[in-house]
Amino acid sequence: MTFSDDELRAAIAREMPGVRADLERLVRIPGIAFEGFDHSHLERSAEAVAALLRGCGLDVDIVRAGGQPAVIGSRPAPPGAPTVLLYAHHDVQPVGDPALWSSDPFEVVERDGRLYGRGAADDKAGIMAHVAALRAYGDELPVGVVVFVEGEEEYGSESLDAILGAHRETLRSDVIVIADSGNWDIGVPALTTSLRGLVNCFAEVRVLDSAVHSGMFGGPVPDALTVLCRLIATLHDEHGEVAIDGLVSRGGATVDYPEERFRHEAGLLDGVRLIGGGTISDRSWTKPAVSVLGIDAPPSGAAPNALVPAAKAKISVRLAPGDDPKSAYAAIRSHLEKYVPWGARIEVTLESDGAPCVIDATGPAYDAARAAFRDAWDGAEPVDMGVGGSIPFIATFQTLFPDAAILVTGVEDPYSGAHGPDESLHLGEFTRACLAEAMLLRNVAAGGR
Image (cartoon, rainbow, N blue to C red; front, side, top):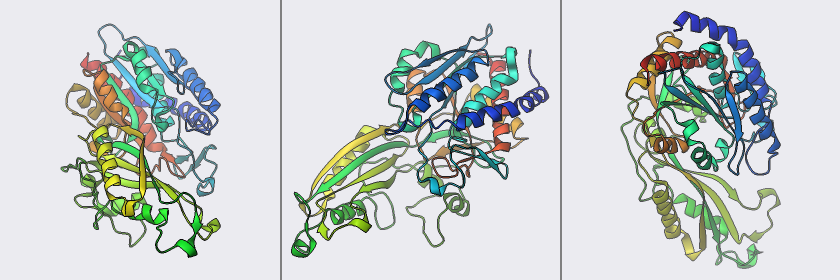
């Protein structure tokens, strides 16, 4: 049976109340894979996802490879039909300071057509978009499906390679849909075709065996915080361009990103200038970026009048598509060791890295996706966009399944606030994303293997 557009619209409309209720139940589970959090919530979250997939008629297993639980559900393809892998993740970011939220991060609240809560967009709505599409078809699913819901994506996917290796044949598919990105704007769908890579490292400087009196020794003796500040200042030139030799930098992003919109989406304060050069799209998607995410130092209110003997910073570097994380880390380390001032000792350690990726979004599967987007968004032309963030495992999927078409989609919009306070999901866009995925499965089936 081939479903028409009207039949799929009616099916999605029928399923959305239940989909939303199940999404709210998922959001209430505080499944955080970071160290120091109660990981039993991830067990609860995995069980909840497994129950949802079983309810769609899939054979389901909860799997792990030394890390947090992932869920794999599968249903074989009808004769001659292709198989589609649907990816999402059920873990979420820590909430940060709860005082910055307008409501409890794990109590779902609707305001002005948006659903607020940690994971409401990233990425529990991704899970429910898959579920919505499966429910819309019921027993008439036109393709084979494998649903893979990871449990530690926000914490670096440390066990993902082992899980993929152990279940490679189960996960093998013709098309891979990764629902962990976003759309260009409210009312404008998108395929993500490039993502930056990532190197996170720690730089610790030391100048003294222990703290000493700032009056007796200050002047001749540098304190570690001043050393660290001067070192951090070398990471950019006076215009804000990244000043680390050896990093790849590209240009040529074709999408116009208006500065006024960008400033609004970032929440940039009036008078604060953008840094770097080139178009905003290039600066955000195809050039490297360096940020200092945190510093270990005495808190200012309790700091004694003593020279700080050691200070440590976490430095995050986003890598341009085409760069290599290993060579990039070597370049970062070489820069820090070269520019540490006044002979201070420095130790640089790698925390994590991930490869960038570029997707050649041409071929029947991408045509099928764009047609689904146009229909679900009432004729809006989809955008091929880059993303400044990183999903390193996409490169792993490209390596393991070189013949599969990889479609990076998602439910977020520029105002979702993923990873920040008041994360939210636009309910109208969510409905369109669910409809688009149902239409995509139909279109892929029509194209065959």
